[in-house]
Length: 130
Image (cartoon, rainbow, N blue to C red; front, top):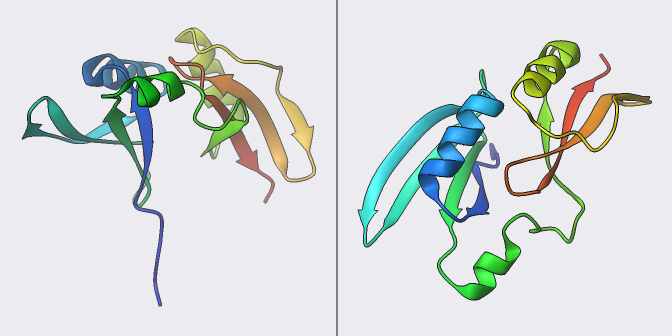
C-alpha cells in the first residue's frame, strides 16, 4: 500500500492575497489555480522541491469559516515546514517580514522556530537532525 497526504486545506479570506504572501514570503510555488465558477477556485501551493503534499487554499464563505481563519487549531502549531537549511530559510523569511514568535532553538529532533503566516496560523520552521 502506498498513501500520502495530498493536500491540507487552509482557510483564507482571499485567494490572490494568500497566493501573493505564500509565494513571496515563504517562496512557495503556485502549482495550480483553476476557476471552478461561482467565485470558487482550486488553488494549490507547495514549498520548493516538494513532490507530494500541497497546501490547498480554501476561501472562507461562511461566518463560521471566517471565524476560523488564522486559528484552525486553537492556537497550536498547525503546519510544519521542513527545510534542509534552517539558517538560509530563517534569514530569507525574516527578510520578507515573516513574524517569528521565538528565536530558533535546538531540540533533540532538530532546529526549530515558530512563525506566523499572514493570518496568524502558527507554523514550525524545522530542520530535522540527520
